[in-house]
Amino acid sequence: MKTVAIDLGGTIIKTGLFDHDRLVESASAKAASGKGLKNSWPVIRKMVDLLLKDHNVKVKEVLGIGFSFPGLVDSSGNRVLSTNKKYDDAPEMDLTRLAKETWNLPLYLENDARMALLGEWQHGAGMGFENIVMITLGTGIGTAVLIDGKLLRGKHFQAGNLGGHFTVNHRGTVCTCGNIGCMESEAATWRLPELIKSNVAYDSSSLKKEKILDYEVLFRNAARNDFLANEILGHCFSVWSSGLISMIHAFDPEIIILSGGIMQSAPVILPELQKRVNRYAWTPWGNVKLLEARNINTASLYGANYLVRNGEKK
Ligand SMILES: [Zn+2]
Image 1 (cartoon, helix red, strand yellow):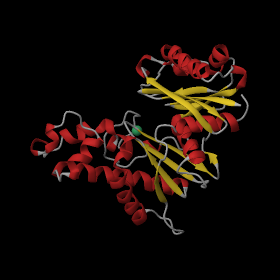
Image 2 (cartoon, protein in one colour; image 1 turned 90 degrees about the vertical axis):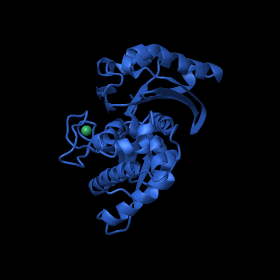
Image 3 (cartoon, protein in one colour; image 1 turned 45 degrees about the vertical axis):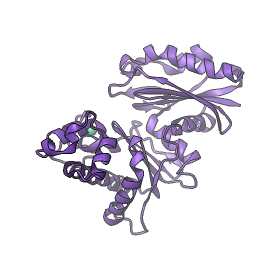
């Protein structure tokens, strides 16, 4: 039997067709997450229909649709609970009904960070482990937790998802979530330009010549020994490692999988964070191993496939 996976991102929509555990084909299109999910549905529908048509797959050969969403979701009731400027109309929508009306198929909804964790667990860096924390460092910071081979969801479906909003600086910046000094508001990509420009060393830094201020630019300038780039990077390492250590103290994982665009600099990031985790985390049994995600672009699709094949019937 086949499954269809849909990964709704802030900037890209991805779809995939699976035959058992094999990703037969994937496709992607530009997302307009600011314009809502209702508006994006015709694009999603077209992408899925094309995948099925290209591989001569009839709808009756498909087990279900795995749907990865960038927000807090109730995976039991298939409802989006809360969004943050992406597909903000989704909480009003009945996704079960929509999938039934569109393809007459059951839908399996899950948060995107959890879906990526399922994917890396089944088909990536997490294979062979049952206790995993996954952190995606990107525009925001997404987290998810697997304990004893089960996704941590909690009473209100937000357990493990809000690691990016762990307080790392009680005197810090107000975050988009309303809290003060979150890991995200201290060191996610969206905060970088302000962090850099408000520093007194900005005028004499090579960063002043850069049009875009993201992590790729920061790492490049730090490698050239720019003073400010190194200072900001040091700040980010300190924020990220604080977040990782809180995740370790809260969830007792065997490994932490790191993902996101920032992993382009994995050879610099991983050893530095590993050194700090080994030094500061209270883990008398040994050290939590930090691993790079193996499927940065397709983990959520693999997770969606797993969820459809192993989730409870909807
Ligand atoms: Zn926050």
